[in-house]
Every structure is written in C-alpha cells, then in structure tokens.
Length: 178
Image (spheres, rainbow, N blue to C red):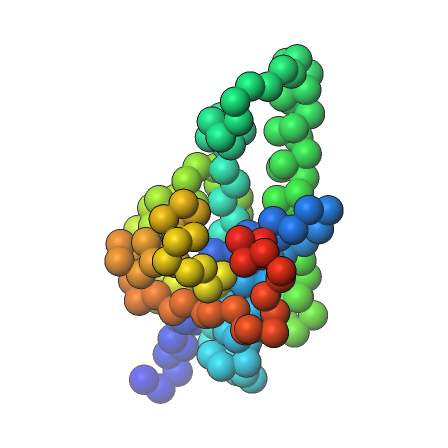
C-alpha cells in the first residue's frame, strides 16, 4: 500500500427541489441528507470522498397526466421546459457551491423521468459506493398516493442505500410539502 493512493469513496445523493409553493430551493429532505452526509460520513477528510448529485425532473408529460385539461401553445410548453431546466440547474448549483466552500470533490447532473427508476438506473451506470436519499416521513395513507422514492431505491438500487428521515421540527404544515 505504500505510495498507492486509493480512489475516493463515491457517494451519490438524490436531490430534489422543494414542493412548497414559491420556494424554488433544495427540499428540506435533500438539504437534510446532504448535511447529514457532511457531518457523519465526510466530517473532515474531504479528499477521500467524492459527492455525486443527481436531480431527476419529472417530464412535463408525466406531470400533465395528473390534470384534467390544459391549454397551452407550443411556446408555453417550451417556456415551461426552459424554466424547469433553469430551476434544476439552480438546485444543483446550491449543492455544488456548498462543496466548493468546503473543498470536497463533486459532480452533478440532471436527468428526466420517474425519479425512483432514474436514480436506480444511474446507480447501475455510475457505480457509487453508496446512495444517500432523504425521506419526507410520509404516513401509510400518503405513501399509497405519493409513493416513496427512498423505499423503492432501498429495495432496487445496486448499492447500499442510506435513507435520512426529515426531523420532526423541519416538517412543513402539509407533510407532502418538502
């Protein structure tokens, strides 16, 4: 082992933006998972770690399936796509900026699709040492309708998965918000 430098531990974090209206920032759960990772896994020896941030955006067509009807011109749809991409980049910029402040190596990228499936696909493609995801702490009734990315990833990702629960004092009034 003399003179041989080991590869850094690669930690993938699935991050999302807040669903609280008018709050285009990292979700409470994403920030919590990131901060937990910094405090518990990467507390001081930053050179031995590389953080991999993945933000999955739900495509416009999937989000429109939940609506009864919508009228929009092609320009409206293009504006929505551009806005979503800009918001996604802003989200990743938050995490990359924090990594630059503390000098920890990182990568970040956007994908489109069903978050739970895309995260598991990216785990298979990238081969991180483990995956960290936040959990909103939904109750059984809410899980049926909203689903949980963290539970799906824990069952299907091809690496160890750490799920970080949101603290009780961080929960918004509506538990679906994050």
